[in-house]
Image (cartoon, rainbow, N blue to C red):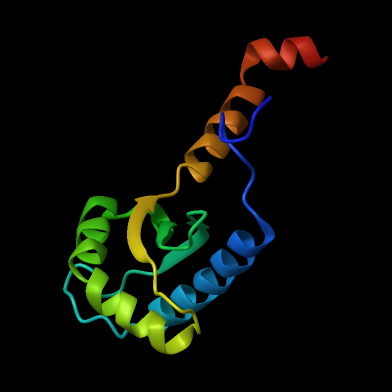
Length: 128
């Protein structure tokens, strides 16, 4: 199989930079430094930051705790991308600060769906 076809696993550098960015974003969100009514009182979990191979783009997967106001929180984060990127530049030492994209993390929904399936009568019948 030739290189460049299909999906490749992230490099160690992508994983390391992504984890550093995740920690810095968590700190930033914990301090509540972003002044926006849609973010007031919103507590968020940043579950993962995926970096592009050239480290110029970062996709931030997050979820507001309780799952409340997901659309409003996403829109507020999109409005404040420039500020967040600037704050990250102070916290993380990189040659170029990547462009940020905020997406709701679907992992928690999938886990809930799997739990629901495992508890369904059909599956319970097969397990017993």
